[in-house]
Image (cartoon, rainbow, N blue to C red; front, side, top):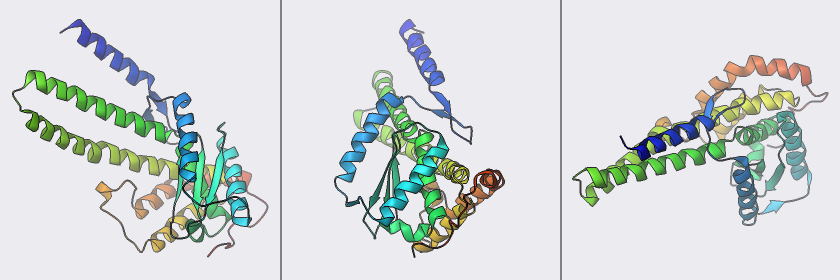
Length: 272
């Protein structure tokens, strides 16, 4: 076994060991090669360019609700990010998203699903959870690892096998698809489940009743008309899986809520 191979293997082991971090609440060890010093500028730049192509509402009651509730839940997270919350006018899109470093957007089409302050607090908590769990960096790390592994295998097959170039390409394409279905999609579902848990715990710490987190997925299911793709090919868990996951953590979330609940009704309908 060559010294260069041993050196490469040792370096890889060192990188894998140093890249392990724990996710809030779930405690899962995650593989993360990309530091905040790279992800935060990337998130900020992507946020600016993405919002430039959308209709961003910068004043009005809905804008204020998104910003105020977002800031309250972000404070509960304890993460020291330069949080930004954009309200996007798009009634046809039921969506919210988060970029690294706490750059969050909420679409107006999502407000009827949120229905009230607590519903919006869970949605924002979910997106904040993606940021504090470094899910974006983990996904990028996974993609870098898969691409590096396939490139290395291609070199190995080229030097050590009698496969033609076309045969190698077919094999690598099949392995790439296997990695996508077997690794990348399941990790995405894991991220969604973790963001649900983290979001529920953050909303409870911010003073919002965590039971609204389950009601959100009931309303989301109705809004989607029950449409879904097979679970093994979906980047998101099924609605039933999400709700069961939240029920498992509900006792802990309610204890946190009882210590922090707001002195006002946050479940009365605002949007319909």
